[in-house]
Length: 302
Image (cartoon, rainbow, N blue to C red; front, side, top):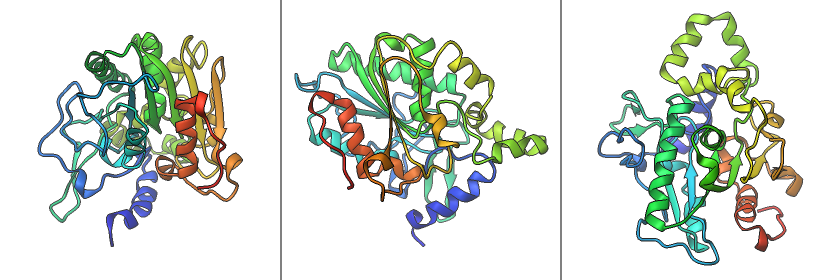
């Protein structure tokens, strides 16, 4: 069975151990070697349209766009659709793979090696994002970037904004199904309290998973004193059918310059779950509107 067909089954299996907040990578994303420690040269294949370091922002789109994947994902597979879409619209697009560890390379059993990112603690990954944003700004000459993130990638940049000086360097943060206030993983995270040995095994392999459980020390620190920081515009795009960041309403933010959107408000017959939010035409239309609100267009189905 093709890997893409297996993905929902794999996602369900990993959910049972509290690991999955993103997606698994396809075979074509396999790199030659491990990532650099700072996350700025992951050697994971670039998604189409991303990481053209000769790109110079246009007057129409002065902010480069940095794409931030989710847990158990990488820059290639998470942004196969959005990266070329934004590039075709004239944006300078950049993507990184963050949170790789020494155990981040998984074999499928057929000789295919899959790079898995987003495993390290949220604070460590936010530091990698900070380094990458500085590289993008230095390359493009842009004062600020816009960030689009999926799952952990929509939440983790908030740590960068709040604690690592990112508020002065980011204009807009757009989150697709972000884990902004943690998740119960449909109640499975709560079940871990009854099996502390198993939980510790999971969290040792994936500290970011523990960080994203509702009520964690990281969630408490991140949201203390308010969800937002001054000067940044926030957009959250959610789906009723999210089975990973649950309850889905916890993805929403409160504060100034916040827009909370739900895919089904624009298309009642759209059924993207958590993983599919990075590929849903309706969700991605909301993304392009959020990045360029002066030229936003009505969002319908498809």
